[in-house]
Length: 370
Image (cartoon, rainbow, N blue to C red; front, top):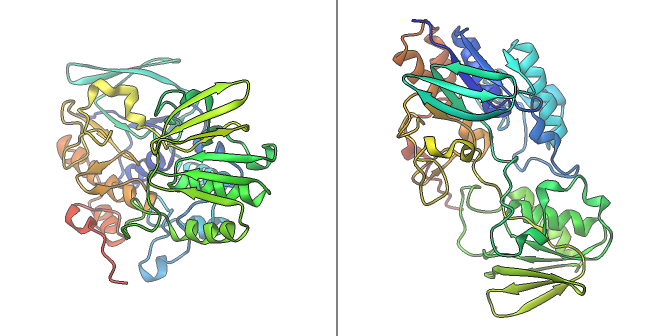
């Protein structure tokens, strides 16, 4: 038996999984990308940077936080610590070329069906068939643009090319997590006044897991923005509705107050799971994430696997690259065992030695004493 495996998406998850297959010696696979390699990163606002720094620490067993394979480092390749979206897209493109990954770009998957034991994927190029599918579409292409009534009147940060291009004014940013604070500090840096409406309390319960609290890089920039006196943060408050008329935009807040703003409000309410494209092939949890087996496989569709930032198991959230890359080998191991694929078993040891093969999820409880 020589099964064919399809990876959908050529971002960090898809590229990372493709490299692992190559290193294992698996040849019968392909990667489909609806745009270009790393295209989501090319669409970041020009000012946006990774909140996780890159540093070449492989010589001492510390893998670059933004690497997607054990023997590569964006810091080493690009000689940069704080990567832009364009930087990271270049890194992924270089990896795809170096490892000669079988990627077909500009192939848009419109639907996935399970017919017997095989998958049929309908695309703009016609039908593709596969014995297993690994969904690696990420989240940036799927902004949460309708979190409340009237949200369509706001501008989601995903559609900002550069904060420099906005006319100066007093902006309201809706959302107080990473994307909201990134919007705020960049708007302030360009001379604007900014009010952030945040459901969270910034100085509430401290969480060591950066998936649950602001990153140190964000705190550093916030302190600079606050010293300008042009930044106001309204905490523990939600926007419940936006009404637009000739006077501007009226925001109805959960504290019973209303706020009128002239510039279009900025919506920083995050993103939806890319797996929603094939929603019926997964069970879904209350957290808005697909339910998965311990091998990151759909609980209702055998041989459909999920990799990337939408992977979650109970309290373990894998939304950062340095987290979700640790599950590539889990999926690959399941596939080589299930289909009895010839492979180099030492590669799994290599990945484990580089903190890229996580099977014990109990270690994901992050604690810091100080």
